[in-house]
Length: 129
Image (cartoon, rainbow, N blue to C red):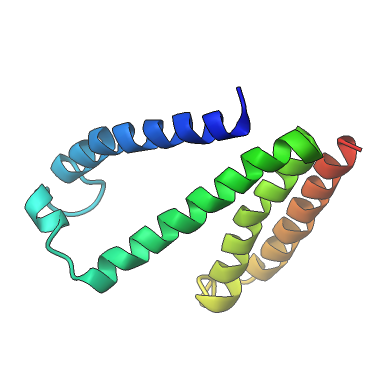
C-alpha cells in the first residue's frame, strides 16, 4: 500500500466512523444532557472553523507522517509524528496553564514527563538509524 492509499483509506475510515461516534456521543454524552444533531450544527461559523482548522492540521500532519515513513523509515517517522503530542502538552502547560493551581510536586512530575518523553522519542528515532 502506498502512503497516498493509506491516507485515503484512513480518511474514509475517519469519515465513516464519525457518524457512528457522533451519534453515540450526542445521545449518551460523557458529561451533560443528551442533545441532537440540530444543536450540533447550530454553532456559529467561528466555532466550526476552529474544529475544521484543527482537523485540517491533523490530517495534513498525518499525511506528511505517512508519506515520510517511506523515505525516512517508520521509526523516524513515528518519532517525529509523536512530536505533536509533545507540542500539545507544551501548550497545555505553558499557554493554557492547566496545572497552575496543582498540588506541590506536580511541577517536578511535569518536568520529568517532558524529559522522559523527549528521551523516548530520541531513542525511537535513533533505533531507526
